[in-house]
Image (cartoon, rainbow, N blue to C red; front, side, top):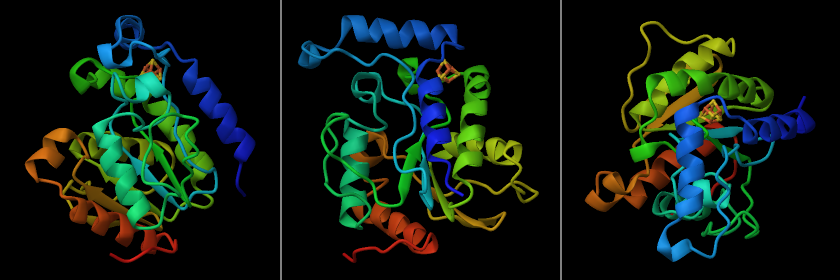
Length: 235
Ligand code: SF4
C-alpha cells in the first residue's frame, strides 16, 4: 500500500539533516555567497528531498544536488543545466506535465516517476566522499522501502549513483545479483522483481560532449517507463 504520509515525513526529516559537517558547511556557504545571477534568490541551502509521487512505479536515482541548482531551488535537478536536459526528456516521453523545471513552485508534476539521490546535499565539486555517501545511505534505504509497493523499475544516472544505489538496494532487503551488476549506459538488469537500468548521468560533461544525447536519454527513459507499466509518448 502506498504510504504517502510516510514519504512526506521522510522528506521533512531529510530536509532537516545535518549529519555531514563538510556538506552542511558547504551548502550553507553557497547559500550565503550565491552566484551573481541568483543574488535575489533565498537559497534553500539544505538537503534536497526526493521529488515525485509516493506511488511512483519508476524511480530515477542521480548523484547529488548542484550547488546553484537543487541547493538553490530546493527541488531535485531544478534550476540547472542537468535538470534542463532531464526534465525536457521526461516531458518528451510523457512522464512530466511540462518541459522546464526552474523553481519548486513552477507547477511541474511527474507522472508515475520519482527522482532522488544517494546524497541529498550539494557537495564541493559535485564530489561527495565515500563517508558522506555512506552517511546518507539510510535516507535512500528508507525511501526505497516506502516506494517498493508500487515500484517496477529504477534508472540510475551514472556510475557513482550505481555504486551508491546497489548497497542501498541490499540494505532495503532487495536481492541484488552476485556478482554485482556493472554500470553501463543502456544496461538492463533484473533485480528482485524490478528492472534496473543504467544511463549516463545528465551532467554537462556528458551532455555538452555528446556522450549522452537527448535521444539516448529518451530511449532509456521510455524503455524504463514501459517496464514500469507507464504510458509513454513516442518520438
Ligand atoms: S548528505 Fe545526507 S546524511 Fe549528509 S547532511 Fe546531507 S542529508 Fe544528511
